[in-house]
Image (cartoon, rainbow, N blue to C red):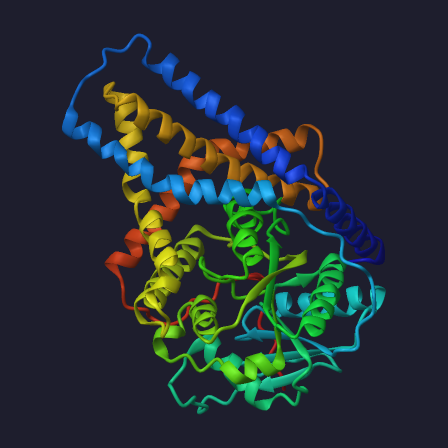
Length: 461
Protein backbone atom coordinates (compact mmCIF):
# COMPACT_ATOMS: atom_id res chain seq x y z
CA UNK A 1 0.00 0.00 0.00
CA UNK A 2 1.47 3.37 -1.03
CA UNK A 3 1.63 6.43 1.21
CA UNK A 4 -1.35 8.08 -0.44
CA UNK A 5 -3.52 5.03 0.13
CA UNK A 6 -2.37 4.86 3.72
CA UNK A 7 -3.39 8.47 4.34
CA UNK A 8 -6.75 7.81 2.68
CA UNK A 9 -7.32 4.82 4.99
CA UNK A 10 -6.57 6.93 8.08
CA UNK A 11 -8.86 9.74 6.91
CA UNK A 12 -11.66 7.27 6.13
CA UNK A 13 -11.34 5.70 9.56
CA UNK A 14 -11.52 9.08 11.26
CA UNK A 15 -14.56 10.04 9.18
CA UNK A 16 -16.60 6.93 10.04
CA UNK A 17 -15.79 7.31 13.72
CA UNK A 18 -17.48 10.72 13.70
CA UNK A 19 -20.42 9.48 11.60
CA UNK A 20 -21.32 6.54 13.78
CA UNK A 21 -20.53 8.52 16.91
CA UNK A 22 -23.85 10.31 16.43
CA UNK A 23 -27.23 8.64 16.52
CA UNK A 24 -26.92 7.66 12.83
CA UNK A 25 -26.90 3.92 13.54
CA UNK A 26 -29.88 4.22 15.89
CA UNK A 27 -31.95 6.25 13.43
CA UNK A 28 -31.08 3.97 10.54
CA UNK A 29 -31.91 0.84 12.52
CA UNK A 30 -35.36 2.02 13.55
CA UNK A 31 -36.16 3.43 10.09
CA UNK A 32 -35.10 0.24 8.34
CA UNK A 33 -37.00 -1.93 10.81
CA UNK A 34 -40.25 -0.02 10.26
CA UNK A 35 -39.83 0.15 6.48
CA UNK A 36 -38.96 -3.51 6.09
CA UNK A 37 -41.71 -4.62 8.47
CA UNK A 38 -44.33 -2.78 6.46
CA UNK A 39 -42.75 -4.04 3.25
CA UNK A 40 -42.90 -7.68 4.35
CA UNK A 41 -46.56 -7.31 5.37
CA UNK A 42 -47.46 -5.71 2.01
CA UNK A 43 -45.57 -8.31 -0.03
CA UNK A 44 -47.28 -11.14 1.84
CA UNK A 45 -50.68 -9.54 1.30
CA UNK A 46 -50.06 -9.11 -2.43
CA UNK A 47 -48.68 -12.63 -2.77
CA UNK A 48 -51.66 -14.24 -1.04
CA UNK A 49 -54.37 -11.93 -2.42
CA UNK A 50 -55.48 -14.22 -5.20
CA UNK A 51 -54.46 -17.49 -3.57
CA UNK A 52 -56.78 -19.98 -1.98
CA UNK A 53 -55.75 -20.03 1.65
CA UNK A 54 -55.38 -23.57 2.91
CA UNK A 55 -56.08 -24.27 6.56
CA UNK A 56 -53.83 -26.96 8.00
CA UNK A 57 -53.69 -26.50 11.80
CA UNK A 58 -50.80 -28.90 12.35
CA UNK A 59 -48.72 -27.24 9.64
CA UNK A 60 -49.66 -23.80 10.88
CA UNK A 61 -48.17 -24.55 14.27
CA UNK A 62 -44.77 -25.09 12.64
CA UNK A 63 -44.72 -21.36 11.99
CA UNK A 64 -44.29 -20.89 15.74
CA UNK A 65 -40.59 -21.43 15.10
CA UNK A 66 -40.38 -17.79 14.05
CA UNK A 67 -41.16 -16.80 17.63
CA UNK A 68 -37.75 -18.19 18.63
CA UNK A 69 -36.14 -15.34 16.69
CA UNK A 70 -38.02 -12.56 18.45
CA UNK A 71 -35.88 -12.30 21.64
CA UNK A 72 -32.47 -12.03 19.88
CA UNK A 73 -33.90 -9.72 17.22
CA UNK A 74 -35.41 -7.42 19.86
CA UNK A 75 -32.19 -7.42 21.90
CA UNK A 76 -30.18 -6.61 18.78
CA UNK A 77 -32.49 -3.76 17.78
CA UNK A 78 -32.40 -2.33 21.31
CA UNK A 79 -28.60 -2.46 21.21
CA UNK A 80 -28.43 -0.78 17.80
CA UNK A 81 -30.86 1.88 18.98
CA UNK A 82 -28.76 2.53 22.08
CA UNK A 83 -25.41 2.44 20.28
CA UNK A 84 -23.20 5.50 20.66
CA UNK A 85 -19.54 5.67 19.74
CA UNK A 86 -18.33 8.21 22.30
CA UNK A 87 -15.35 10.16 20.91
CA UNK A 88 -12.31 8.97 22.83
CA UNK A 89 -10.08 11.75 24.20
CA UNK A 90 -6.70 11.67 22.49
CA UNK A 91 -4.72 11.88 25.73
CA UNK A 92 -1.49 9.96 26.26
CA UNK A 93 -1.40 7.23 28.90
CA UNK A 94 1.59 5.80 30.77
CA UNK A 95 0.74 2.10 30.53
CA UNK A 96 2.54 -0.08 28.00
CA UNK A 97 0.24 -1.74 25.43
CA UNK A 98 1.21 -5.02 23.83
CA UNK A 99 -0.40 -5.96 20.51
CA UNK A 100 -0.29 -9.74 20.78
CA UNK A 101 -0.94 -11.71 17.59
CA UNK A 102 -1.48 -15.45 17.41
CA UNK A 103 -0.82 -17.09 14.04
CA UNK A 104 -0.06 -20.59 12.91
CA UNK A 105 2.15 -18.92 10.29
CA UNK A 106 0.27 -20.02 7.18
CA UNK A 107 -1.25 -16.63 6.36
CA UNK A 108 2.11 -14.91 6.30
CA UNK A 109 1.18 -11.94 4.11
CA UNK A 110 -1.85 -11.15 6.29
CA UNK A 111 0.39 -11.32 9.37
CA UNK A 112 2.85 -8.84 7.86
CA UNK A 113 -0.01 -6.47 6.97
CA UNK A 114 -1.18 -6.54 10.58
CA UNK A 115 2.30 -5.75 11.89
CA UNK A 116 2.63 -2.96 9.31
CA UNK A 117 -0.73 -1.45 10.24
CA UNK A 118 0.29 -1.28 13.90
CA UNK A 119 3.54 0.54 13.14
CA UNK A 120 1.89 2.90 10.68
CA UNK A 121 -1.11 3.83 12.83
CA UNK A 122 0.86 4.08 16.07
CA UNK A 123 3.40 6.30 14.35
CA UNK A 124 0.64 8.74 13.51
CA UNK A 125 -1.09 8.38 16.91
CA UNK A 126 1.59 7.98 19.62
CA UNK A 127 -0.75 7.93 22.62
CA UNK A 128 1.16 5.24 24.51
CA UNK A 129 4.26 3.09 24.44
CA UNK A 130 3.65 -0.19 22.68
CA UNK A 131 5.23 -3.44 21.62
CA UNK A 132 4.22 -6.15 19.17
CA UNK A 133 4.31 -9.80 20.23
CA UNK A 134 3.75 -12.60 17.72
CA UNK A 135 3.41 -16.28 18.58
CA UNK A 136 3.52 -18.82 15.75
CA UNK A 137 3.69 -22.59 15.21
CA UNK A 138 5.79 -22.26 12.05
CA UNK A 139 9.20 -20.67 11.82
CA UNK A 140 8.47 -17.54 9.78
CA UNK A 141 10.40 -14.34 9.14
CA UNK A 142 9.24 -11.65 11.54
CA UNK A 143 10.16 -7.96 11.03
CA UNK A 144 12.85 -6.47 13.30
CA UNK A 145 11.61 -5.06 16.58
CA UNK A 146 8.76 -7.56 16.88
CA UNK A 147 8.99 -10.07 19.73
CA UNK A 148 8.52 -13.53 18.26
CA UNK A 149 7.54 -16.54 20.35
CA UNK A 150 8.08 -19.69 18.28
CA UNK A 151 6.07 -22.38 20.02
CA UNK A 152 7.88 -25.75 20.19
CA UNK A 153 5.94 -28.72 18.86
CA UNK A 154 6.53 -30.54 22.15
CA UNK A 155 5.03 -27.76 24.31
CA UNK A 156 2.10 -28.93 26.42
CA UNK A 157 -0.03 -27.12 28.97
CA UNK A 158 -1.02 -28.60 32.30
CA UNK A 159 -4.64 -29.14 31.18
CA UNK A 160 -3.84 -30.20 27.63
CA UNK A 161 -5.08 -27.07 25.84
CA UNK A 162 -4.86 -27.12 22.05
CA UNK A 163 -4.75 -24.80 19.08
CA UNK A 164 -5.05 -21.08 19.75
CA UNK A 165 -5.58 -21.49 23.52
CA UNK A 166 -2.30 -23.39 23.71
CA UNK A 167 -0.49 -20.65 21.79
CA UNK A 168 -1.95 -17.88 23.96
CA UNK A 169 -0.93 -19.73 27.11
CA UNK A 170 2.60 -20.17 25.72
CA UNK A 171 2.89 -16.44 24.98
CA UNK A 172 1.54 -15.63 28.44
CA UNK A 173 4.23 -17.78 30.07
CA UNK A 174 7.08 -16.43 27.93
CA UNK A 175 6.28 -12.71 27.85
CA UNK A 176 8.03 -10.38 30.31
CA UNK A 177 5.26 -7.78 30.35
CA UNK A 178 4.75 -5.90 33.61
CA UNK A 179 1.51 -6.62 35.51
CA UNK A 180 0.20 -3.10 34.78
CA UNK A 181 0.68 -3.45 31.01
CA UNK A 182 -2.36 -4.08 28.84
CA UNK A 183 -2.68 -6.59 26.01
CA UNK A 184 -4.65 -6.07 22.82
CA UNK A 185 -5.23 -9.53 21.38
CA UNK A 186 -5.43 -9.57 17.58
CA UNK A 187 -5.88 -12.18 14.89
CA UNK A 188 -3.26 -12.50 12.19
CA UNK A 189 -5.30 -10.36 9.75
CA UNK A 190 -6.49 -7.69 12.23
CA UNK A 191 -5.58 -4.18 11.07
CA UNK A 192 -5.86 -1.50 13.74
CA UNK A 193 -7.14 2.02 13.05
CA UNK A 194 -6.64 5.46 14.57
CA UNK A 195 -10.07 5.17 16.17
CA UNK A 196 -9.12 2.05 18.12
CA UNK A 197 -5.88 3.62 19.36
CA UNK A 198 -7.97 6.42 20.86
CA UNK A 199 -10.39 3.84 22.23
CA UNK A 200 -7.59 1.86 23.90
CA UNK A 201 -6.16 4.98 25.52
CA UNK A 202 -9.56 6.06 26.85
CA UNK A 203 -10.48 2.58 28.12
CA UNK A 204 -7.15 1.95 29.86
CA UNK A 205 -7.21 5.39 31.50
CA UNK A 206 -10.72 4.76 32.82
CA UNK A 207 -9.96 1.25 34.09
CA UNK A 208 -6.72 2.29 35.79
CA UNK A 209 -8.52 5.17 37.50
CA UNK A 210 -11.39 2.95 38.71
CA UNK A 211 -9.32 -0.13 39.52
CA UNK A 212 -11.98 -2.41 38.02
CA UNK A 213 -9.74 -3.74 35.23
CA UNK A 214 -12.61 -4.93 33.06
CA UNK A 215 -11.98 -6.82 29.82
CA UNK A 216 -12.77 -4.68 26.79
CA UNK A 217 -13.95 -5.35 23.27
CA UNK A 218 -15.29 -3.29 20.37
CA UNK A 219 -16.49 -3.49 16.77
CA UNK A 220 -14.88 -5.34 13.86
CA UNK A 221 -15.42 -4.45 10.19
CA UNK A 222 -15.02 -6.89 7.29
CA UNK A 223 -14.92 -4.87 4.08
CA UNK A 224 -11.25 -5.30 3.13
CA UNK A 225 -11.95 -7.76 0.29
CA UNK A 226 -15.31 -6.32 -0.74
CA UNK A 227 -14.46 -5.95 -4.45
CA UNK A 228 -12.75 -9.34 -4.74
CA UNK A 229 -15.25 -11.39 -2.69
CA UNK A 230 -18.50 -9.38 -2.42
CA UNK A 231 -20.80 -12.34 -1.70
CA UNK A 232 -18.81 -13.67 1.25
CA UNK A 233 -17.89 -10.20 2.50
CA UNK A 234 -21.55 -9.21 2.73
CA UNK A 235 -22.24 -12.45 4.61
CA UNK A 236 -20.32 -10.89 7.52
CA UNK A 237 -22.38 -7.68 7.61
CA UNK A 238 -24.41 -9.43 10.30
CA UNK A 239 -21.29 -9.79 12.47
CA UNK A 240 -20.65 -6.04 12.46
CA UNK A 241 -24.29 -5.34 13.32
CA UNK A 242 -24.09 -7.91 16.12
CA UNK A 243 -21.09 -6.03 17.53
CA UNK A 244 -23.00 -2.74 17.51
CA UNK A 245 -26.19 -4.37 18.78
CA UNK A 246 -26.14 -7.39 21.09
CA UNK A 247 -22.46 -7.19 22.03
CA UNK A 248 -22.51 -3.44 22.61
CA UNK A 249 -25.55 -3.86 24.87
CA UNK A 250 -24.06 -6.69 26.93
CA UNK A 251 -20.80 -4.79 27.45
CA UNK A 252 -22.68 -1.68 28.55
CA UNK A 253 -24.08 -3.88 31.34
CA UNK A 254 -20.61 -5.24 32.10
CA UNK A 255 -21.50 -8.79 31.01
CA UNK A 256 -20.56 -11.27 28.27
CA UNK A 257 -23.76 -13.34 28.13
CA UNK A 258 -23.45 -13.78 24.35
CA UNK A 259 -19.79 -14.76 24.53
CA UNK A 260 -16.81 -12.87 23.18
CA UNK A 261 -14.80 -12.65 19.94
CA UNK A 262 -11.30 -14.06 19.64
CA UNK A 263 -9.75 -10.78 18.55
CA UNK A 264 -10.04 -7.16 19.68
CA UNK A 265 -9.69 -8.25 23.31
CA UNK A 266 -8.22 -5.60 25.62
CA UNK A 267 -7.12 -7.08 28.95
CA UNK A 268 -4.75 -6.06 31.73
CA UNK A 269 -1.77 -8.39 31.98
CA UNK A 270 -2.35 -8.96 35.70
CA UNK A 271 -5.88 -10.22 34.92
CA UNK A 272 -4.73 -12.49 32.11
CA UNK A 273 -1.99 -13.99 34.26
CA UNK A 274 -4.43 -14.62 37.09
CA UNK A 275 -6.90 -16.49 34.87
CA UNK A 276 -4.65 -17.89 32.15
CA UNK A 277 -5.57 -19.56 28.86
CA UNK A 278 -5.05 -23.17 29.87
CA UNK A 279 -8.66 -24.09 29.19
CA UNK A 280 -8.29 -27.79 28.38
CA UNK A 281 -9.48 -29.55 25.20
CA UNK A 282 -13.14 -28.54 25.62
CA UNK A 283 -12.15 -24.88 25.82
CA UNK A 284 -9.83 -24.99 22.81
CA UNK A 285 -12.42 -24.95 19.99
CA UNK A 286 -13.89 -21.51 20.70
CA UNK A 287 -11.43 -20.41 23.34
CA UNK A 288 -12.73 -16.85 23.30
CA UNK A 289 -16.25 -17.58 24.55
CA UNK A 290 -15.06 -20.35 26.88
CA UNK A 291 -12.57 -17.86 28.38
CA UNK A 292 -15.31 -15.24 28.82
CA UNK A 293 -17.33 -17.74 30.87
CA UNK A 294 -14.29 -18.51 33.02
CA UNK A 295 -13.75 -14.78 33.51
CA UNK A 296 -17.39 -14.22 34.45
CA UNK A 297 -17.27 -17.07 36.97
CA UNK A 298 -14.14 -15.47 38.45
CA UNK A 299 -15.97 -12.20 39.03
CA UNK A 300 -14.42 -10.18 36.20
CA UNK A 301 -16.47 -7.60 34.32
CA UNK A 302 -16.51 -6.47 30.70
CA UNK A 303 -16.76 -3.17 28.87
CA UNK A 304 -17.11 -1.61 25.44
CA UNK A 305 -14.07 -0.11 23.70
CA UNK A 306 -14.67 2.59 21.09
CA UNK A 307 -13.08 2.28 17.67
CA UNK A 308 -12.88 -0.26 14.87
CA UNK A 309 -10.55 -3.03 13.76
CA UNK A 310 -10.53 -4.25 10.16
CA UNK A 311 -10.51 -7.98 9.40
CA UNK A 312 -11.17 -10.25 6.44
CA UNK A 313 -14.14 -12.41 5.58
CA UNK A 314 -13.80 -15.96 4.31
CA UNK A 315 -12.73 -16.33 0.70
CA UNK A 316 -14.54 -19.58 -0.08
CA UNK A 317 -17.89 -21.10 0.87
CA UNK A 318 -16.10 -24.17 2.21
CA UNK A 319 -14.05 -22.01 4.58
CA UNK A 320 -17.28 -20.29 5.66
CA UNK A 321 -18.93 -23.63 6.45
CA UNK A 322 -15.90 -24.96 8.33
CA UNK A 323 -15.57 -21.74 10.32
CA UNK A 324 -19.23 -21.74 11.36
CA UNK A 325 -19.12 -25.46 12.10
CA UNK A 326 -16.22 -24.89 14.48
CA UNK A 327 -18.10 -22.04 16.13
CA UNK A 328 -21.24 -24.12 16.64
CA UNK A 329 -19.35 -27.09 18.08
CA UNK A 330 -17.13 -24.89 20.23
CA UNK A 331 -20.02 -22.87 21.62
CA UNK A 332 -21.87 -26.09 22.41
CA UNK A 333 -18.84 -27.30 24.38
CA UNK A 334 -18.63 -23.95 26.15
CA UNK A 335 -22.25 -24.20 27.27
CA UNK A 336 -21.96 -27.80 28.38
CA UNK A 337 -18.42 -27.88 29.79
CA UNK A 338 -17.26 -24.44 30.94
CA UNK A 339 -16.79 -24.19 34.75
CA UNK A 340 -19.41 -21.48 35.14
CA UNK A 341 -22.89 -21.33 36.69
CA UNK A 342 -25.77 -22.11 34.36
CA UNK A 343 -27.12 -18.61 34.85
CA UNK A 344 -24.02 -17.37 33.03
CA UNK A 345 -24.55 -19.86 30.18
CA UNK A 346 -28.32 -19.83 29.74
CA UNK A 347 -28.52 -16.98 27.21
CA UNK A 348 -25.64 -18.40 25.20
CA UNK A 349 -27.42 -21.76 25.13
CA UNK A 350 -30.61 -20.08 23.93
CA UNK A 351 -28.62 -18.37 21.17
CA UNK A 352 -27.40 -21.77 19.99
CA UNK A 353 -30.98 -23.05 19.82
CA UNK A 354 -31.93 -20.01 17.75
CA UNK A 355 -29.04 -20.63 15.38
CA UNK A 356 -29.96 -24.31 14.99
CA UNK A 357 -33.59 -23.41 14.27
CA UNK A 358 -32.60 -21.80 10.96
CA UNK A 359 -32.72 -25.34 9.62
CA UNK A 360 -36.52 -25.08 9.57
CA UNK A 361 -37.55 -21.41 9.47
CA UNK A 362 -36.84 -20.62 5.82
CA UNK A 363 -38.13 -23.93 4.38
CA UNK A 364 -41.39 -23.51 6.28
CA UNK A 365 -41.79 -19.93 5.06
CA UNK A 366 -41.10 -20.85 1.43
CA UNK A 367 -43.51 -23.78 1.67
CA UNK A 368 -46.20 -21.42 2.97
CA UNK A 369 -45.77 -19.14 -0.03
CA UNK A 370 -45.77 -21.99 -2.55
CA UNK A 371 -48.72 -23.92 -1.14
CA UNK A 372 -50.81 -20.98 -0.02
CA UNK A 373 -50.85 -22.26 3.53
CA UNK A 374 -51.09 -19.51 6.09
CA UNK A 375 -50.57 -19.17 9.80
CA UNK A 376 -52.67 -17.31 12.38
CA UNK A 377 -52.40 -13.56 11.90
CA UNK A 378 -50.53 -12.95 15.13
CA UNK A 379 -47.85 -15.46 14.10
CA UNK A 380 -47.60 -13.81 10.68
CA UNK A 381 -47.04 -10.43 12.33
CA UNK A 382 -44.40 -11.84 14.66
CA UNK A 383 -42.68 -13.65 11.77
CA UNK A 384 -42.75 -10.49 9.65
CA UNK A 385 -41.17 -8.51 12.48
CA UNK A 386 -38.48 -11.14 12.95
CA UNK A 387 -37.69 -11.21 9.23
CA UNK A 388 -37.59 -7.41 9.08
CA UNK A 389 -35.26 -7.32 12.11
CA UNK A 390 -33.04 -9.97 10.55
CA UNK A 391 -32.69 -7.94 7.34
CA UNK A 392 -32.17 -4.74 9.34
CA UNK A 393 -29.12 -6.20 11.04
CA UNK A 394 -27.51 -7.09 7.73
CA UNK A 395 -28.22 -3.67 6.20
CA UNK A 396 -26.96 -1.73 9.24
CA UNK A 397 -23.77 -3.79 9.29
CA UNK A 398 -23.34 -3.14 5.58
CA UNK A 399 -23.96 0.59 6.11
CA UNK A 400 -21.11 0.85 8.63
CA UNK A 401 -18.75 -1.18 6.43
CA UNK A 402 -19.56 0.85 3.30
CA UNK A 403 -18.98 4.09 5.21
CA UNK A 404 -15.51 2.98 6.21
CA UNK A 405 -14.76 1.65 2.73
CA UNK A 406 -15.78 4.98 1.20
CA UNK A 407 -18.54 3.71 -1.12
CA UNK A 408 -21.41 6.08 -1.92
CA UNK A 409 -23.92 6.81 -4.67
CA UNK A 410 -25.32 4.19 -7.06
CA UNK A 411 -22.66 1.64 -6.17
CA UNK A 412 -23.86 1.81 -2.58
CA UNK A 413 -27.42 1.11 -3.69
CA UNK A 414 -26.14 -1.90 -5.65
CA UNK A 415 -24.61 -3.39 -2.50
CA UNK A 416 -27.80 -2.80 -0.49
CA UNK A 417 -29.84 -4.65 -3.12
CA UNK A 418 -27.18 -7.38 -3.29
CA UNK A 419 -27.42 -7.78 0.49
CA UNK A 420 -31.21 -8.17 0.46
CA UNK A 421 -31.28 -10.63 -2.43
CA UNK A 422 -28.56 -12.76 -0.85
CA UNK A 423 -30.25 -13.08 2.57
CA UNK A 424 -31.87 -16.48 1.86
CA UNK A 425 -28.52 -17.80 0.62
CA UNK A 426 -26.77 -16.67 3.81
CA UNK A 427 -29.46 -18.33 5.89
CA UNK A 428 -28.99 -21.57 3.94
CA UNK A 429 -25.22 -21.35 4.48
CA UNK A 430 -25.61 -20.82 8.23
CA UNK A 431 -28.08 -23.72 8.37
CA UNK A 432 -25.75 -25.95 6.36
CA UNK A 433 -22.96 -25.26 8.83
CA UNK A 434 -25.20 -26.54 11.63
CA UNK A 435 -26.02 -29.67 9.62
CA UNK A 436 -22.29 -30.10 8.99
CA UNK A 437 -21.63 -29.84 12.73
CA UNK A 438 -24.38 -32.34 13.57
CA UNK A 439 -23.18 -34.86 10.98
CA UNK A 440 -19.50 -34.40 11.86
CA UNK A 441 -19.35 -33.47 15.55
CA UNK A 442 -15.77 -34.65 16.03
CA UNK A 443 -13.29 -31.84 15.42
CA UNK A 444 -10.53 -32.89 13.03
CA UNK A 445 -8.16 -30.09 14.02
CA UNK A 446 -8.55 -26.33 14.19
CA UNK A 447 -9.41 -25.14 10.68
CA UNK A 448 -7.42 -22.02 9.74
CA UNK A 449 -9.32 -19.86 7.27
CA UNK A 450 -7.19 -18.84 4.27
CA UNK A 451 -6.40 -15.13 4.37
CA UNK A 452 -3.78 -14.92 1.60
CA UNK A 453 -4.22 -18.07 -0.52
CA UNK A 454 -2.10 -16.80 -3.42
CA UNK A 455 0.94 -16.15 -1.24
CA UNK A 456 3.48 -18.83 -0.45
CA UNK A 457 4.49 -19.35 3.19
CA UNK A 458 7.85 -17.71 3.72
CA UNK A 459 9.78 -19.93 6.09
CA UNK A 460 12.82 -18.66 7.90
CA UNK A 461 16.14 -20.03 6.73
